[in-house]
Length: 442
Image 1: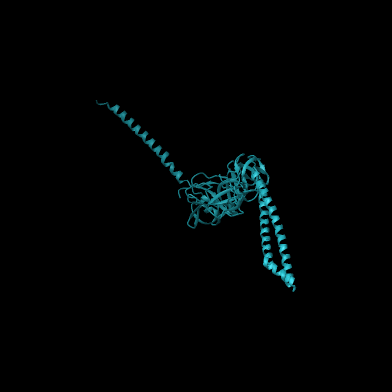
Image 2 (image 1 turned 30 degrees about the vertical axis):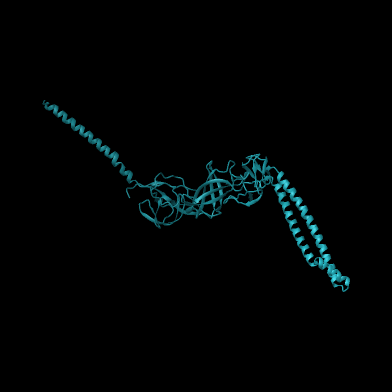
């Protein structure tokens, strides 16, 4: 079927109109989705002004709150527990009674020791009398042997037949020495027995709070021998153990004392630092501590000590550090997670820029100026967010941020960071005026 000419002309105009519409859509899409990207790509990075203020370098770690003084006293006298005089959470003074064991056996040993002491004292008295008699006999023999009369000679011969006076004196002296040694040992046994009786009452070696009781009435506690061995707490903990001193007797099968005591008024922070950071910290440096339980509270602390020996966990070497706190919040508890930041260096009234503006290549540091030129600079302290500029820039110079955020980690070069530029900077540095340059590609 052949259409009339006027109908064919109408279809051709419709086709041309459709093609024009499609072409317009294509051109619009091109400008919207392709050409619109070019100005964005051509837009320059944000820039900030070189500012004068303070730059602080620091290292951080996390740890826990721990008591600066703890103790786990154990009975030095073995026996059956008859009384527990404290409760968990109770605050006790140094020397306060904690618990008691049955004293019958210890008191029996004391009575035996005292009887032995009396017997030893009697032996000393008898030995002294024997020595006096022997010395008198020797003196008489000496006088008789010196006399020329036949009577004196007869007496001397009679003594010679019985025992030599000098030997008798020597034997008496030896007997007295043994008796005195036995008496000294008996005296020591009495002192030990009295101590064993006194130790049937367990006393607190430090003032603090009872954090645990590891025994019960009716259980057997204490050392079977009553002896003690030295023991001190871990690094930086200042802990003590034992019956009222830094020594402790053999503990229970669980390896703990009968009770655990901690000084909750003297908490400290124990944290581990990797070896790269540990070489930057030393005793006496100031630090800031925040608790996860109270994130809005900053606590002032001082680095008290750094362990000289490392700890290796899964191939990672770290050093333990202990921080003393100037003041504790009322709700602080042992074991709470604490984040600690140690100030390792500080430069006052110096020029600085965000660390994201500095590119480091080997020993060369450069920044990109707002006009697109590159400039080599000498840097000083590298803080967590800012880097000190010693030479190469003047206050007020505009430098570009390398597509990064302000607030990168210490020592970062500023490359490969993404995000937005915050407006607020640390104290002393004021507020950087963040600008956008209107320019093409660089």
